[in-house]
Length: 248
Image (cartoon, rainbow, N blue to C red; front, side):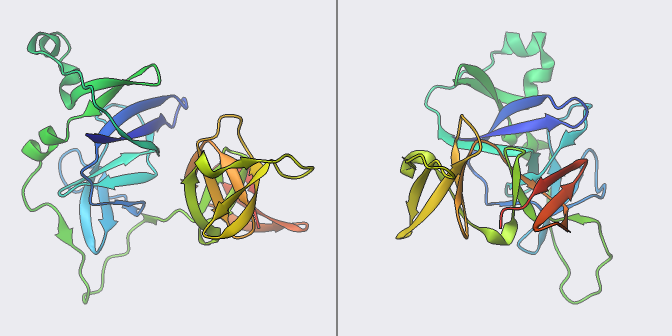
């Protein structure tokens, strides 16, 4: 079975938790509306003219949620999606373990990945407990109440450089990268019959981010919302307490 291996980062101490989510999603969204709707839900996530109740790990922490995986009756928030991976060997928790550690009931089991134990979030438990008909269609004719909607406008690459959302052509794996060191670039990649120069932003790359003019060999890609400013001869993105150059 395939799983999305995801990272959830604590906003207060920057510690991260890796979990797995079943690959049964109907889509992905970053349109989060901060509004309490029922019980322990965080708010709404908008996807294809519908609003899905949002949730994440039920811990007393302030998580950074940038991406929401959309299931048929809810949305699950994470900081980053690391990889979509097929896992063959799953370990289940037995009854005795769950009696000793009841907090593990939110997980259906675990597996080993890159020498780490990754816990699988139990989406069946959510389906059993979630109210029926909680997904609602957004009104199309009536005037809607203005909500606070977070819409990321840029990709932050390895905390070194940013690329505006509309300037991204694609994000692919590293298998097509051809090393060829020059003064300015580290190699090249062919994508849809076009050659792009590649610059490395990490020594442990997982992805190639292809923009309109060049590509970046990167490890960590994050969605962010920031303000765009002109600084001397270049544009910069300001978000949170950081300022990064924008790749143009």
